[in-house]
Image (tube, rainbow, N blue to C red; front, side):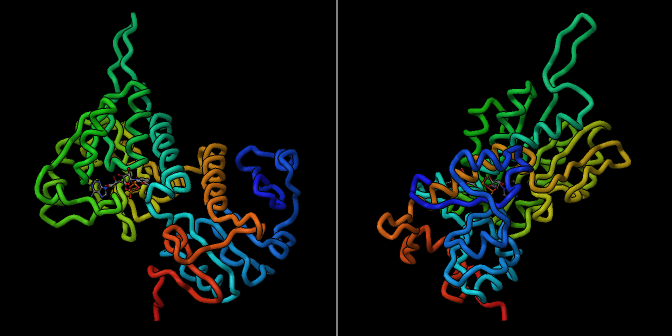
Length: 350
Ligand code: NAD
């Protein structure tokens, strides 16, 4: 709207986030069914990219979350009908793109909600409480993986009054953990000093490192009430950080939350979309798409990420965005254009 575009919204699009159609109408949009919108649009903005968009015209740009490694068929289908697919989840981690970074905006909410989900499953209180009927000890929370989600999990658990410790392979997180009032639990060796890629992500670690890390986790985990895992390695399955034996070492009533469950999982025994209870009375929470469990805020932050992206490439004279293939951001996010798959991570599988 600010850009002068005519905006239409799919009927019922906001119902899961408690945003009624009338709110979009009040903001100046029209409401229609998907088929009508798809055929008329020059630019389609979506949350998860639909596997196909029947009726969409060649040259229409689709900005959405594609998870291209897992959804090759969707990318190929978009290329086949000449759509320009732009993946918000491939946004490069550069300063100019920070306000468009959907992984950050959503991970932050996931880290927050993971702690609340743990608290809801936990049959005890988080803060220490001194009452006339006795003292309740503070819950002990251990966070594995201290990226955007992990930092928010630490901050949320601290706000709830828990005693928090945390670990990561990237040594740079040690000070961040301390600054949030939590205790860093770290292996410090040559490998951790080089564990961070230039993009700020973790690398896959050696077997020797993994053995040392497993011993440290075994020792730490047995003393915890709550464990939150968030560890991811871009383009690979998530590292397996917690074994069934380590889960079994926790006392009954303890809760683990696996935020990496959809990328194979950090915890042995976690199941995507389920809360599993072990024979030892320990719960492993594996909710899918955790940001969608805070739907209003997830939607609002994602919408702002989309707007910042589209605005950055909007050509005022043309009245539509122009995707400059030499721009670092466009290079990072463009999957298909002109009937072809153009992204280097999507080299032909044949
Ligand atoms: P992520 O979601 O890829 O991974 C989560 C965490 O898991 C990371 O901290 C990672 O180091 C850790 N991890 C991976 N393997 C592990 C293992 N075996 N054991 C323990 N921990 C393990 O990470 P993220 O949340 O996307 O953040 C990664 C970095 O990128 C952070 O430094 C973050 O501040 C930075 N970042 C930069 C920008 C930007 O500049 N635009 C935006 C967002 C995040």
